[in-house]
Image (cartoon, rainbow, N blue to C red; front, side, top):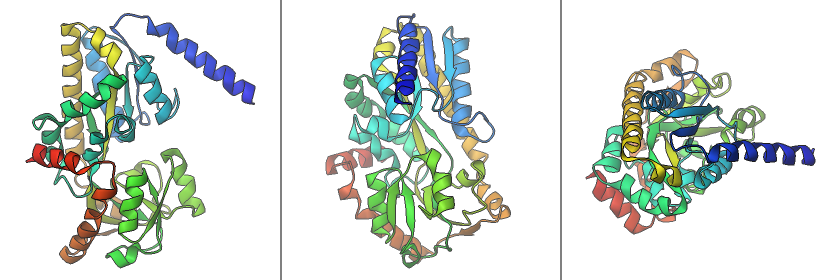
Length: 325
């Protein structure tokens, strides 16, 4: 079995290398979502982006999510120029430039528009790229998975911090584990493809995610409680090979920039269509809890304590604060 895996890995590497010497107008693009643009914001973003590239003269070969490996493998392939553009978790560019983690600081941005403003008008996307591009990766932007994230669980309604005690939730990273601990819960890092099984077997009791997620992945049979505390913006990154980007002509870069802008615009319109998602959750049998002002304040105050424990230092948080203001 080990030999088979090695042979498969070698075959994949040869396939990618075969296209590495192709012209700059050849793009290998990796999507991160199941193939349904109406349900999955990521797939819709990818369709719009690749369509605009093709209209602009690029040859695009699109790969389904996980077809070329997990998050670590995709980051490695992009940094080497074997894959030109891919959709990735925030941690991928975050490993190269910690400023990236600012996009999902708890209770930091009031809405998606404020985050977009900080990235673009506030110059944070440029600052992120100052750290990632010397390491072979350019961040083209971020797309929104759905409305701001809240807390799902399989056990009981969460109306206050006391209700978080005893819950074990899936976490994205160590920073989210610290956030859960500040609320009285515990966390464990689990890759998303393994989450459904983890919920069914009781390995975890829930997760932090936008309200659309259990509907998309058929989890409402056992994820029965949602707290709409809107703790953070739910975003993923669009990363590109810096070597590939630098090989483009000015006209080709303009096409890429326009394609990102078009996909972002469609993504924000997609987001607006899902404002009523909480009612859909309730119809699916999920109890939705909206916190009282006092309970919300308690969650926010507790979350502030993890800022000093996260990947951003005081200067990084100050930079994001200035950018959004």
